[in-house]
Image (cartoon, rainbow, N blue to C red; front, side):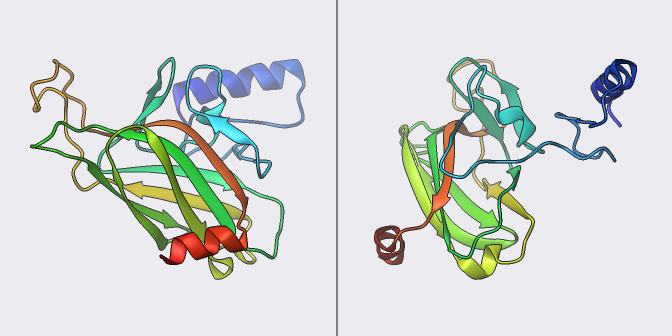
Length: 187
């Protein structure tokens, strides 16, 4: 259990709380609060609340966004049960510098199944349909973003930042997939 988790646990015990939350520690025995209300927009900038869903592979929250660090970043959500495919929308911008790195390739995996491949350059919305068989009878939605070309701004001559950056994430939304979304995903 991480140091910040111990402090939170101690505070909750002293306060007499009956529910224990650990928002920043992936390996804690204390369950994390990763309940998500479908259709709501989750913001990754300061005050957006994305920290409770983020697992490994994320930098500190910055004012408008959070960087995903290479080679992968993970998110975890608990959703109400459903019997429909889901739609995933993420607003991202890639760590790129054409012509050396024209975009960041991103593989999107949900509960271990690849659901999309994106080429992220300029800030834009990227979408994927999560098939019903991937989410049926699963209490959690585990999203893993893989970044085979993550690079540092320093290596591109942009600045002195040596972190392996892939994409900056501005927001995310999970919703019920529609027939239109299914048709677009098939193209």
